[in-house]
Length: 297
Image (tube, rainbow, N blue to C red; front, side, top):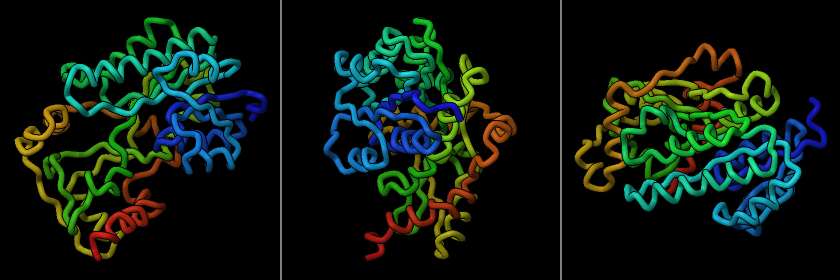
């Protein structure tokens, strides 16, 4: 593939996106540096056993970023979202994203792949606009970059805080509204494609989703995959707003016009892009079963 000797630095390498991307790049023959705050953790050690070189550091530490980026061909940048609606939390995420971009620019990185969020430009009207601000910074400083905008993750439904509880799919999305979703492994696949084919991907911003089932369709698919009844229950936006205004704003937007995804183009680029049913069959059902097991006693 011509990747031998080329190094990609993966930020947030022990997180969902970073870990999946690091593994995909290793499988494709790239040399991978895994940037992590906790190199002794099992997730980091597993990556090291699989061939990644661990780089200890924090995205607030410019010296650590500079050292990790020295001699790299590319960088995969992702920052954890700050769901705290305060301006301070948003500013924190923006600063981390800018730190990584600035360090990449200074290091002469040839290809910077940034994982943003679906409809980032449309979300700019909300207080939660950190990823859009980071996107703008990347363009302003002139990085050779590809911006990926993943939709919500299918894997989130295996998180008890977000997904199923007592056989109920509790969603603030209305029953007939399509929910744009993508599997984390497919985000990694697009990152790998971008690094593999820079002539096709540099300068592009791509909205990523593999499917857009309604909550009612999701409940039916999960019921079939788990062979147990799962029903949809709508969570009122007011209930969300009482806990987190940022999430409430997001769900109101998702229930409205939201944003467009070109599924045909995505499947042209990546024919194996998973639908929600395909994800359930591949690994999703097992993840959901594992998440539900404690609940089932």
